[in-house]
Image 1 (cartoon, rainbow, N blue to C red):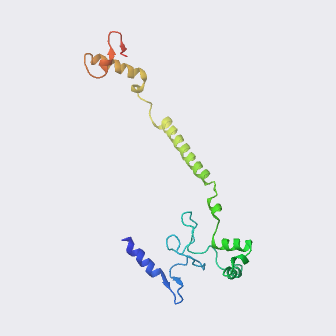
Image 2: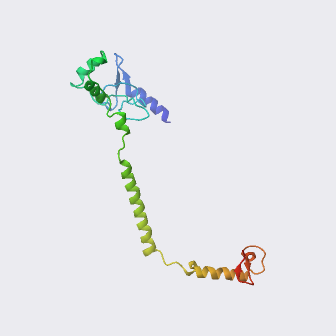
Image 3: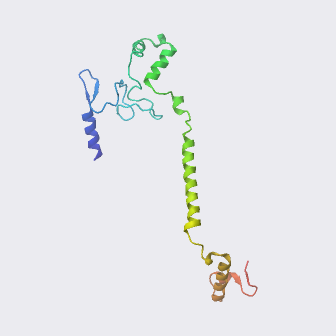
Length: 176
């Protein structure tokens, strides 16, 4: 079901002009920026990705600042200064690889949210235990449990399976 829609999208949203240049019919995603490649998935969008370094379009539009440098770029790159090379890079890409991989500190926000949720859950559990749930019945007390075990041993005396086999009735202690 999805494949025909994708095929129609590819047919209807792009077409070639007489000069071989691709023309986009849909909403203008490129906003006047130069198409320089296929990109990660064929869409004309700029996207910084670590797994695919080559976006489909340039980061910035062509303007009067970069136009003469682009003309110089067509000749020998040795004629370009370091500042012009950096400007060319900044017009093509939003950030360098080291800037892209730099830590952002976003882990602190995630940690704060997780700890806040855990704190609220703990507060809610305490609130329920104090104000909502009734007191525990006496069957949960240790004395009651011990009496229940003793009663079971007395009632089941003489059986050859289960707990009565591990209890010494003469010394009133568990066997080791």
